Length: 527
Image 1: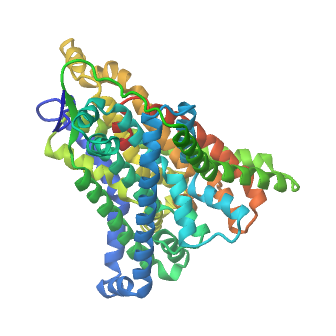
Image 2: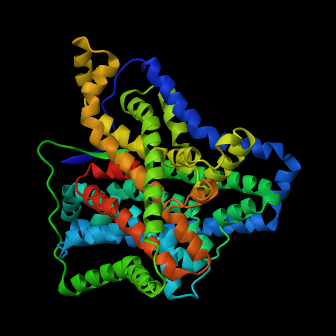
């Protein structure tokens, strides 16, 4: 039994893709580039000297150092926590393992600004770089834990057994066989953590850390210095793009495939000694208490204290309905734009398809504060009649989270044989009808899952919502933020709890799904 490194070969069609699909995919690619292109135009109008002045001033260098340092610390901490936790969940006979999987996934339901607010409410002295790194590590660790757990559960145990038979100890055998197989999943998770940290606004703003997002938002609010905001936004995009390129280079496009006859065995759970079992349970308990227990307890205590003043239930329900409505519009638009790109990427390998897919993933490297800033400039100067409308906010959500919908559509489509559509075509069906009666029916659950992920991610989005929402339109995120800014923690608690409860549903489903099968590694990297 052996393992070789080869390229993944999904089911694809030969020949040129339909012109209609290419045009639709090109429209999606253009839409994805609108914020970035306009930002470049805006900066170029400022003149070279103005750009240089912004780039070389000491505050810009300090901002770069702070942001990069924060990313490095959080990514390192998440890998140090995530890989051992993933091994415990995937390879050991841990008591109540299913419950622990759900618990380590639930921090995905905790927006960084909610976690920061909850900790500050209990410990008002918390602030600064290390406090932000601590909070971001707690909320980001599932991005590493979940895909690595799926990888460990799907890896071939025979390789480790062969290494043991050659005289290697348990740790060395694991490190030289199983761990390298999990590296693509770990690298993908680390990229998500890095992008999340680089684009985070709520936690760094509440904890008063001058990272890029906070500095850009402050420059935007100060109308006399919006050129600085645009220049810094482009620097932030450049850093995010470098992260994406670095992750692709490190991980490469290779996958380890098992080449052998028969069915791959599942690795036998490792029986931990009593001291090791106690240490593992204690470690997972501490992680759960820090990531979930203390923030939830803080929210409940603040809500109880805030109950002395009457809660406006109508206002809370209106904010929840607004969050759901605007996010639903953004998710629908994202799925609509993602369909042609996902189908092209799953079925064809032409240069034009690769270009469209790459450009459409621009949102993967666009922090929300950058998209918000660029759309403010665009609407004010080009289409002022749509400035601060629901459409612009939904459009921002679609651009930001379009890669999630594309990844889900591509994965679902690649899993369906194109022979079904070809057979329908031979029976006289038109291309659209053949697709809708075969592939669409089979891929609809995956496409819907991508749309749901966009919906629930959009509900937690803060900086673009603050910049683009119509006057008087409040979401759960903005209501929470407005109360937190004035230290009204008790009044903010109901909105935080409502947001966490809504987001907990997909986080629970994600934890259950992404650790169930080996194929979940691909889903984790796509989403």
